[in-house]
Length: 605
Image 1 (tube, rainbow, N blue to C red):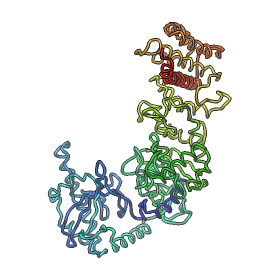
Image 2 (image 1 turned 60 degrees about the horizontal axis):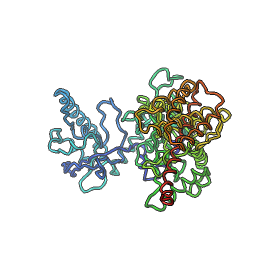
Image 3 (image 1 turned 90 degrees about the horizontal axis):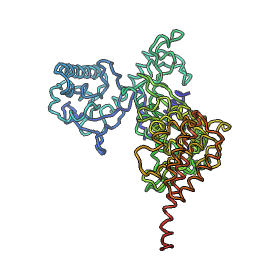
Image 4 (image 1 turned 120 degrees about the vertical axis):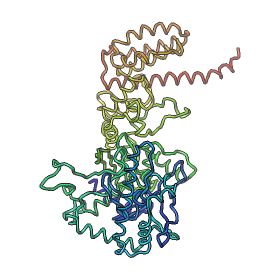
């Protein structure tokens, strides 16, 4: 199903010039320089063609014949393009290497340039093109020692280069006669070398792919030269006498299409709107036909969706999208011009040596997608900690990476399988993984911080559990909620606030010293905290003392007994109760402080 969907995606992308999808026999490569020649083969100049509009130069993407080489493939020159070592015999000196190592690398660069020269001279008579002959004359007379005359090579690094004839706008490999010869070579090679069989994607009898090329690039953490989704390298993976990729027969043309389509949405010019990083997993998504949701979903899930812009039409689309999410009605997608029944595909890939692991695969419609996203954000919805007036206000639609970052001290420490499990829960509407709540509670116990995002995660996790076990989880403070864990969390927040009002700023509050123990074994900790609370209460002014004592009594009155131990679910409820009560206490103080000046003006005495 995955390969079939990607195969169908190729037919859609190839019709859109913005994606620059490679036709059969070609690939999209990052080009850094061009070698400009006269028709007699004389070198005119070496141009830097990188994009210099940003902070650092970026290679441009261009279609070139053939595919990139895998590491360790020996001397294997490309056709009419390659790196500076193959084109010119150039290798930059690294002062950190020994003299013997530098000499070895220079010698290999010279051998690479000789291999490139031999490959092209062998086919010159078959092609009979003036531009190709100009390249042959150039590489015949070129010697690697001439590289010293072109200091620009040191700035280009290890980028790829192509050839162009002076006065022409196209590259040499784009000349009509050369393109026709290359296509004929590809068809002949496929006919001569391939084993024939039934393709699992198309169902047709065709030449089968021994290796599924081009290799998949753009997966975070995978090999830079590319990796494979379909690959067999051990005898244990063989069956019925079938080895290599013939174990899962896919035709040459179908393999090229699905690999090229996947590469396009992973690392092509439009990859930013199709790709999303979730922990160690790279997620890509697409719709069966172009949709506005496809253009905006990566920004939404990645937390980069601007709610203000100078473009009035773009702002209208964004507002319609956010309205659809808030209301939970996929019918609002029609206001964006998208059909709610359009199929939607989501694929999660993670690195696995030279291969890729499929972490998740989800197929639905835009209607179901929006229903699931609305349910997810509704489960997360909780009263903000600081509100819209804060310097960094809490996000109404927090991105997935932000939720995952709350499970570890650093983003690199996020459990590798957690991102896939979280995305699966979001897209299917199933329960959130227990590992998510366990990791968040672990972070709370470690740094004693219960912020908006951690409280929202715990609320969402509890909301998706069977209701009869913990009841409805409120968005804001619910004074009548009877669960002991929730009331104990509220009580802990009141005791902490009383200490703060009595003593002011101190080095270690009761949250710093006792939160972990109080949330796990309240029967041991709270009696001690309540005794200390009496000392703090005595330092408050009479009015505050009465109000605080009344609040504590209301909370404790709902406790039939002090639990000796709280499990994972109750610890989550404890954290939410603490968060709700602390928010309510500080909100009340802010309101009182804001009204105080008005009272003084009306009562000057």
